[in-house]
Length: 100
Image (cartoon, one colour):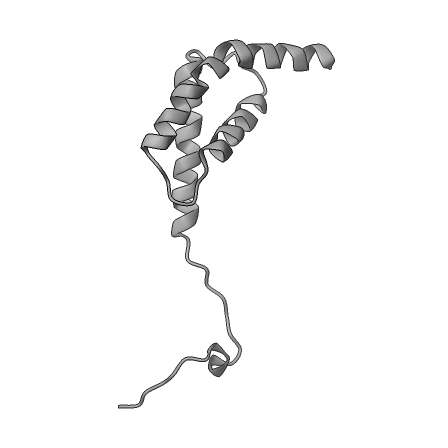
């Protein structure tokens, strides 16, 4: 198990980490409200390390950028979701009503 962790860490150190500065630069230029670039980078590493295998990653730089982009897109999608909840009594909402 330890060898597998070391191999994964080594692969990420060689293939992804050299591009972190460029990814951070892209995140700063495309600033997303309420989304910290550090959080995106951390999530990017978490998603990459959780892959079953790195064999499918042909271009690690492009893959890392795509993962970061997907995280930003996921954030936008979640931000657009409107919470809907039921209220047993409309008066509990404290809304003023006007009858014309």
